[in-house]
Length: 299
Image (cartoon, rainbow, N blue to C red):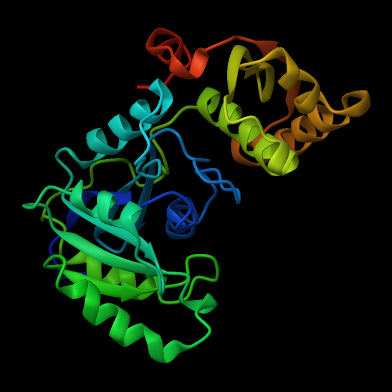
């Protein structure tokens, strides 16, 4: 890690982009050292920009996790996620372009093409631990080097932490000199209300599996703080009445379990007791309505 007392202070914004499900959120959580971006095995889990702040020595990284770049723009939700990517790329100092070891497809190419040509980019090859034949890695890198002039190419395992320190060291010198942008004790610019919504949505994504309705989101209707206690009322929004029973589950079991698991993570992050009440609402067409998306916090 860069920690020389004589080195100049550096600070900058780093956008983490790539196609869906390459491990961008896992990488952000690994680098920050705390879970601030939700993760599941489902593509398109991340739908918003999430900022994570990391201080190491005299360098401050402000990481911006982004939704997976959408090549199918069939509805307003897909367009909103791509706007989040474009907004994250505007004015950043560096990009981590994340791909999966041994795989480069049209979706990866579309995400790469979204990076402005003048922006420095580090090629982050994730999931190298899952590559059965490690001898494939160097030829794979050789093919990618011709696509763009990358400032650095770093193979990692975000899940296991392999080579992530090397990624930080390689990226530190690419940030501009300057004072920290955020305070030393800050880890994100997102508020508790946002994380309450995200943690519940993550648990539903994980529990529902293949039953998961794509048009599912969470709206925090009430968030009250009483000392260290948070009282949170959360509505799970679905697109169709038939989806309501899927989310609730037999005897309410799935929704209760999701709420219980989400509450545990909220209490860990918030540092206090959480009372969480949940229910399901049907709001037809919300994922294809710009007005509905805006009211639900999609930018």
